[in-house]
Length: 373
Image (cartoon, rainbow, N blue to C red; front, top):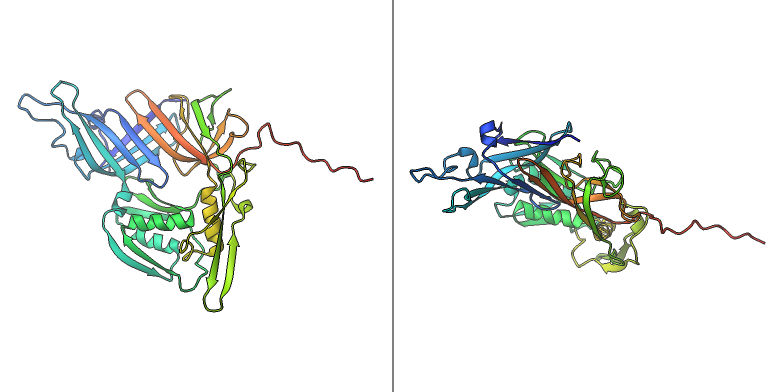
């Protein structure tokens, strides 16, 4: 595997060699359903006149834009973050060589979480609301929105926004079991607003497998939690006040896309939808959404070997885990990644989750019908 490279864009232009030399360690935190954030360290020094460095550099000022991309070997350039400097943390020391400026860069979801307002949406679906919100933010060049079914309960098709656009998007995503987030675009300053479902468990994102043991080992460790009896099946009954008819719905766990072949250990528990929770969502879709969200009980986390793992991990993508026991091996959904870039290494730690286990070595033998006499 080749070494890792990274490049940086400052206010939309490629950073010069002199500008790149100003930065020390870089950490990028990426997590599902959260704003992505980077922290860049810039050493500070003071001249004989008492003037501190970095004070007058425009590319280090608040609200300046920074984009960071990484590539391993001959692999593609993967954007880690594209956003604005939202905080400057100065640590000024009297001892030489210890002063440090830390720049905090937030992705462009920052612009969705600034102005509060009250707004009503009537007769439109959640995906249409998400599209309207994304199109109103000039910093978002495009959007990627999955469609959702219309509500099946007449008279409950109004959504009222009170707060920021980001808060409404989070409400919509929660009730649809979807994710509202912003990703870096293909070019600097071209961020994409996303309102998406979980990826299909069979979807291949081209990531190298995470291997703990055996040939191709590239993990230091893989730690997991596999709770038993904690998945949930949701129920909801909707009453029509005009004719007093009822519409009871219970989620069907077999219709939830599974990341493994076998259900998690232990029976599921029964849960009731809270009053009003499903008013503006199709009743059947509401119980399925809630059950699918509750199905991701298996969690894992670990760290890849520097200069050994050949892909750049990203949340909202699937990755294969190999070299662990048979129950845990298979496809996992990436939930969180921390990228650490220094002058001589590139590290990645990650969190993953899944909603079912693989067959493993302890799966029961196939049943054989008894002879009929």
